Image (cartoon, rainbow over all chains, first blue to last red; front, side):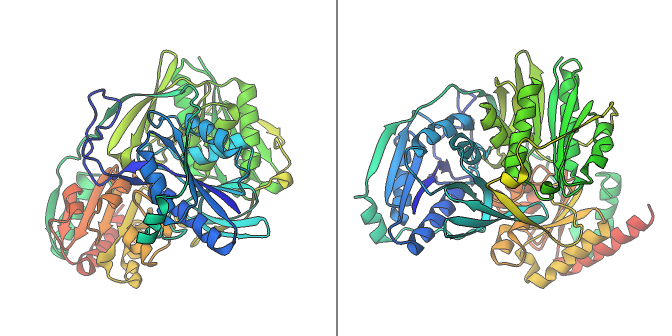
Length: 250
Length: 329
């Protein structure tokens, strides 16, 4: 199988973000970056299919400035075979711009399966996978939490609100990966050494004009400080009183 | 004055609450533009047409009904083709979807087919001159972006629970029509929708969410949380990632950065320390209650009301008290 996985380099979210001087970007000073978790699970899904289907090839694609090569190398060190950087000064916010650039690259690759993470936590829009599928005219299943592929057909499970869908699809197809599909492998030392020699092609990204623009970024208002009502079951009557009279939710 | 399209999400022959929220949002946007019409599209199996009058009650001037035996389950390709065709021919200023599992799947496909951008998880919107300007959380809700949409139509997926479905009766003129493509011809087929645990309230839609963490010590102790939810009667049960990773609860119950985002009226955290990953999924809740052994746990710091103590002692007492309080209403 020929499998492509599209990955994004994202900041660690476990920090207090600062807004940049331009008011429309996050100050990247001091932030740590790594592959988006959902994308790492997509890479893992591709590698598991490769393990089962000999002769398979996994290509990792990332759009952005040269620092995204680190993210591609991480996926190569996990076991992917080759990388493509679609070079751009920065990653656009508008998912359609990204999807168009990726689709232009993906349509030339003859892939049986194209995988994405279901969303990235920084832009938090979650649209690039299904938009790319639509631009490519391929069948698409989003946010999958299980996957079986046999005889050119796939079956996946999607988690809905209070329900699950079981979905069948033909190949080639585009899938986006949710949590629960797998646990991503850690790169081995051997994998890290091997990744240095794997091919990583750099091409200019074909960027179209954005239709979404960030006017400003703000930090959300802090929640007003709460209080400890009391200790143990003895505090329950006071809590109930506050929920009834102050918060008015009971 | 501009007309606005709304996609009304369904499951089987039921209109989902997020569907009525989409109609309400479309009504608000049409009114803000100086009073255009709202046209709502609803797809489903036989029986769905009977729901058209309900959709009119929430502000749709016209309800486009696609009733077809092949639409018992969500059919992404039929929904995409039908919505895109209607939006294209209707000349709408905006198209409103929901940021639900279905809406996250559908809205980007429709937008791509129309050649326009899409913004999801939208908290609020305004019309400013030639743009529609929306607020959209980024970086797991730690940053809020104000985003201007130049695209026409503006394709917007609203976050569930930020707009209350509001009765605002309009004509609700019904137009029955056919799906844009034959459901049988779709390449992607939802062969089954498994609904979990008999009419459970959904996490994103429930006014009250009770979530449990590792402090509950074992899967079977979630019974405490379920009992408290039952005492409220309008509550859904969620869990932390630690708990779903351990298999105590299904992944679909996970609240947090990689799971569900909820903003209920009342959120009760039971034995949850409050990791950043979890706070990302619930920090916009209106009132937060934390019950935790550790008075210094991060969840106690963000909670409006904290009780420091043993969950096995506090939660049964709270369940009893809520049951009593509900009795007197």
